[in-house]
Length: 244
Image (cartoon, rainbow, N blue to C red):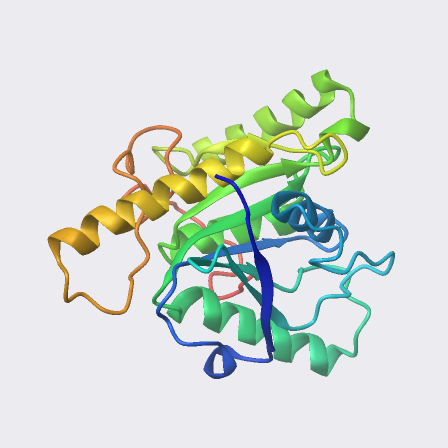
């Protein structure tokens, strides 16, 4: 997929302030300081699409960009070490949870994880929350240029093993580097594949509006985007109502 245009649409404080649901949306979210802004700039080919800040938790609103005039890239506030007042943090986290659960045209969430860290509980809880609410997503391990390949693979495998304890099928996993542009083609390929699946569905059901979240035909197979039906029972869940 080539990116010919990337236009800022709006910064929304909540779901009601988001644009209409006429275009499919792909949301990116991760722990604060995971390298999300750099990744979004790399994907779009624009150095200033998302503001890169040395302060964790800089993104506080739902930032929406229209790409190629056909789909939207959604930059969601990170979770974790946000330097904002506790009241404000609770407010924008609630808005993100509302967006993820109720945005009808949300097609896929790209859950970003720092490849240089052993599995973090906060990441595990957020990924499990996505699965609990049947939100389609893939995992993206970032900053691979900063970590020896063996360590990257060890951290990914540890995360995968944790998920395998509770789920029959595992989500598709990607690695990326904003510096080397590793993973750009693969991540844009996921978006392209979902867009194609949406197009096929619309041709079969021309009056279906708005665009619902769908995933490629491979959903349910190992390594596919996670959706409802891939989970297996779990005996104990930590913070079942916590977004992250």
